[in-house]
Image (tube, rainbow, N blue to C red; front, side, top):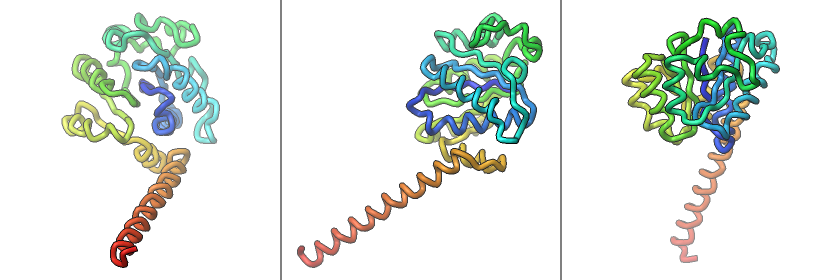
Length: 225
């Protein structure tokens, strides 16, 4: 069983949604139950629900259609991320008595034995917010000894490499590129790969215009135009 925290809002959705989908689809394809939350973002809570439902209801032939409450559960967002994670480390059912749709967690067979972070095999934090990774590491990893992997926007990635080297996190996906590499590793090139191709052409076009601009500058300078 894995817990995925969708800690991002719509402003960075184009970069992080493909990554989140790849993680969830990988779990479903392996028959792994998924607990979804939006620990850091009330804004992103509806987006996270949409991602989970899309992966569950559109399996693309990779796995059977997944049922909410049987194969996965979405808990949503609670105010005050720090307090929420502290409470989850002690008792997930006391923190989230019901799921996002109001169903009691204790009524879901696969959730009955899940009480704390220790009962979850792996935590995946996908975030676009500064400070969120540190909060997860401080509470889930350092206090409750949970194993964490992270995915984040490419612009943030360099600051978190030391945590990977110190093994406070065990995996780190860098933005759209990381999502594309994940899709390829799973043998299912999808949205991230297509967006990377588009990004490649955009970057190539920028380089082309820079080169043309420099050629024009030196030509004008040489001939005094």
